[in-house]
Length: 197
Image 1 (cartoon, rainbow, N blue to C red):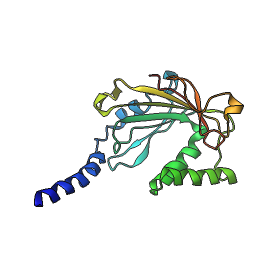
Image 2 (cartoon, rainbow, N blue to C red):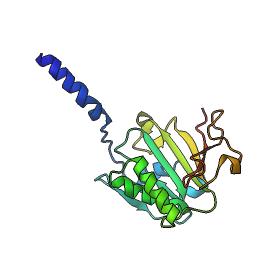
Image 3 (tube, rainbow, N blue to C red):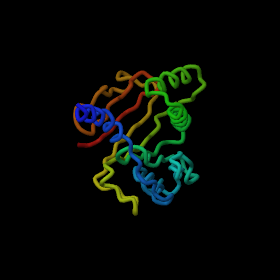
Image 4 (cartoon, one colour):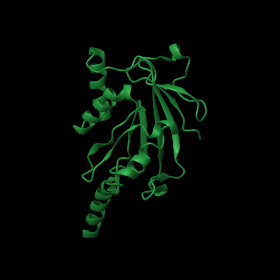
């Protein structure tokens, strides 16, 4: 009976332990190199970069000189996932990070941002705004060089309140890599492009 109880406890605890990842936080230079991977080559050197300090807090690693902001990989999450986006999206993105830090779920966070966009408290860009994403597996990442092998690109173009009717885009992809409109008609409507396989 003791073995059965111990087995049940391990089955209950192990899944939570498996989700807990404490990846090493790479040096600042490596974080920057990885964070800008999705950006166009001519934009990489001038992008503002957020990354993580030794305490796991998101901080500014480099001030930028162009219109891109890049976010480094979160060491507390499995896999590698970095993104760069237009500065015009920063109020929306920063508010999302702020609400996430308070422990709100994705649904709770989106309801608050939707309300704030509706009242004008939170401004969304009036023209399409780009986000570049690059992601892959932890085992394909070289922490000494910042290189990610076998990574995949995904592109996101925020077009607030766009609809399938206004864009002519479908609300789901019909083939790998084709553009489609996610969350049509909402403040966070965006065109998804990729992944490509």
